[in-house]
Image 1 (cartoon, helix red, strand yellow):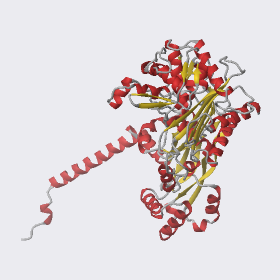
Image 2: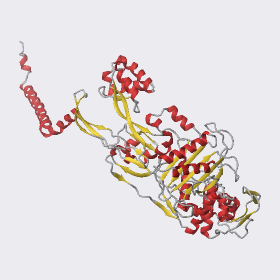
Image 3: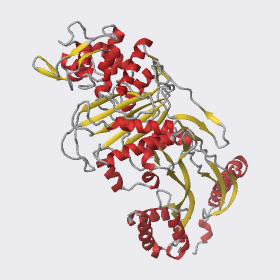
Length: 626
């Protein structure tokens, strides 16, 4: 007997199926209610965000000018080269990579990898190929031969251009791409992953002013994420203009003299700094050899950076603040002021230098001639080593003169700013060394000797200074006893011409020295020139100063530029009072340091720093200011 197949379909199954369908539709209804009613606004916003996107619009970096408005750093039009993978046929990908690599001086594999990566990520978005803005001629070449560059887009952007790049690079520095670590720290401040940032110099120190304010562009995209149109635009804000205390005319006068000396083989390297002693304004700062910061602006090659790093003259270092050297006889100012301030010497303290040397425990100490009787003024003016050995630690030439000792010399040296950074608004400043018995014990694990005191008295031995420190110390004597913090920032001006920052000069300290002793030093510094020790023929200005010769480093062989290493180096630190007197009225002080520039120490040696100082100051002061 056949059984009815419907007998196997029990009503309970229909009921279970119906319940299941009810549950499913109830869940779908609930989810639909949640999407449309409860969270409708939220998901509507998400959909809108997928359709509408806000993109940043980069801002122009602010300019850098000298005190008179001469432009030192500005932006010029450049172009970015990008590729939109969807517009590039795959068979032509390698061909384009090779062509762009040749044009932009990049490895072709790197270009191809960028395109392939972006094709996977989002083929409708452009990927930037040029790491730095490309010049106009390359951009035009690409645009005019579009058939050779399928999928390539050229967009306008800015290139940082430095006037007189090599002249100002050690001072102004350069910008460069932000690193990943920097981006993580700065992204909350509005920086983007492909931003440029000040890497060194003024560009780095005053990044906060120079960086502009980003704008934004609101665009609409289609479902494939292709841009359709711009819906709204907020223009970016241009960065502020940083006005420096530098006077471009003096900077170029100083640079021309130093550069000529190198070209004529009178010395191999040189540093020059000029400042206003009355407020710490830096008027000029030159470091030779330097480098061209425009190389970094356009995108420096690995070969170029390797050459700069391999150069034994260290062109990337601003020698005015970043390297330290023995001060030589310029340091006699410190020894003299120490003895005067402690009362172990006066202007009438006499030392009869009857010989050119003497010995202590078998060690000879020399002078460059037997001067005969010297007082403080003539001892300083003739730069007698034995006179200052006597002031520091006593000698047989003046048994009645008690040496002031190394502790006092260290005390007043530190008061004048040696052994510590000046605080100038530049990165990479060295502290120098102001030695003392405690310093030697701590750093050399050896006791101090009288020979150390003699060497310290004339700026040799352990004494090491930056040109900036030395100049600032003399400036404090020239102005009557105030040690100012050297600075390069005069003011900051926004795009509307409004001054937004104008820092006041910062005093480091007042010197704990009498006006009488400071006046005696100014008188002695003037005598250095008038007696002919610092020979200035037909001088037209009442220049005062002090010469110095230091011996250090290799005295044989050649440096990286093929110039002779002589081991002797010359200083001349000077200031210019308003009249030929001892009043603290100087408006300009200057230090010049020349490297590998003389072979011996004698009264008639040619110290190139002296003649250069005379020519520079006369041209600057008598030629008329801007």
